[in-house]
Length: 439
Image (cartoon, rainbow, N blue to C red):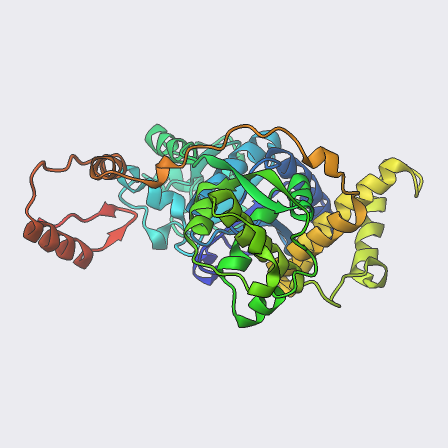
């Protein structure tokens, strides 16, 4: 069985959660894990319904021995800690599940709680010792005396040993200060930003049915190349003749990114009738982002009927009673099949097809399967959120630094001493034991 030590092999800016449910004996492990993955997917979908991810939604997949939940968060560090919050909620609901969470830095929960860790806990001694179980952080202790060797391994525990200890009556719950640090961190979620955008009715239609597409469009626009710009010359998918003022919800990071992005659309795109307001500027950028997104939707359209793995997956769901005895063709059967299809495309196809293709596929599904109701799009809009949060005064910056570091800044510090102090600080090393402040 895999260990929970693989932080070094994780893609940068990605958080991975390995979920270990209690499994039945003498059963097809992969199929049982798929069944668990479906349950977790539905649970997480409900509580993330109104959340807008910075780069991509949760990805759920199945390995030979565990269910994987992962997110590539790029610059959206708040998404990483939202995932920690989700794992706490999931393990509270499914109380048999033990979760190990790592990112490219390894056990980042320990890094956050560095000032409260026992002296023996270092990166090399943390392997298979740090988990989330029933919404709490668990750290398997090292034996403090010979008598405890009966319960706790002196060396690195195997994963099976670790899971058994966490689920046992033995004390593995981390101390209160560690729990408080993690809980305080996951509550520091950045609020969203609601604003007005002048966009084609097709774009408004997409965002009405899937808010997450906003992230895909913003990244397509901001990461564009010359080939992408060609897609904006004719605006074949999203013609700009029929537009509407629509309310759009961004993450604050996505809003700031799109607002500050320098972009001049091709003259042939047809935006000459747009005004100079922020709503029009954002609308131009957003519309071109969606046009670029849909340019990646091509002949790679996935056909479930021709996918033998999909057919095997559906057969296994039938065996597990997923369809609740419903006849094929009934409304409930169709709804359950659609949920299974959405799970499958994200769990199986995303790695091979890429995030952009998955979102383009979702946009195409909405445009072809859900009728566009223009009257529903023409609604009275609440006021846009104030974006003064984009401006930070020196005093606010000092306060933010104090909150993070817990250190009051000196009122008067010379520039030379700041530079010298920062140089000395960079030369030192931080670890689970906390930052080594220069003396």
